[in-house]
Length: 355
Image (cartoon, rainbow, N blue to C red; front, top):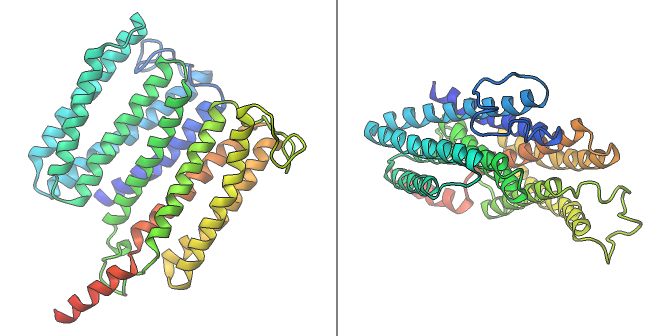
């Protein structure tokens, strides 16, 4: 049950990211002028852009419910039912204060300071609860719940403040963090995929390089989000040049932003290829397949970026570009979750021999 829930949460998060991309790419972000309701209703008339935006909200709700169930089940397994009850109270405080503050902001135009203070108090309590959780799985589930609620709050702020770029980028950044946490939790709960699982010796990998590569991918995703939400996606429409030059000078900063996203794609390609080759040489099975998948995903991502420009931001390649980025990050996170550092493996061997 708990394994299926963790896998469902990770899969639904990918669906949620794609749905969020469709919302942005169809200009549906303000189809519902209020939050958390839509035209004052929790069940608005599902037509046109309202259907796109509200479907995104419903998928987010499903992700949140899966995460709540994971928190309850992991804490019950750790025999910390009291902490689960406390987290339920903290979540109620955060969501209740957020919904009230959102309604006040929509009606009066001012965000109440009390609502902000109550949300911050709720998150401080969440931090305490995560520290108190005994098992790593419970800590991850609780952190995931904090992230998914924060993602929802950022979604609300994008509506209430009319799509501010910073909040939009933070919204995607949080969704990618939650995807990573959900994926790690799902892999940890699958005993056969854990690096400490019984059976053949765990697969080692250069984890420092893996972390650096994952961070570079995450940065590139945020850079792409900034390009998209500032309208810089089509400031250069000639390929492989930009306005007749490899990197034009004396132009608007948005052109430099666009070119930075292009250039960093090749940095990511080099990092992913290098990391993948190093892992593939000494790995087997699923880990080897994931390692070899990485460079292919980067090439697909670059090709989709080119198609996005050539088709003048057609919905399909633009949304697929976002999906490929999420899958690439998930690929690297999975490699981190399924391998261990070589030094850790050497430390385990003497312990096994002594036993």
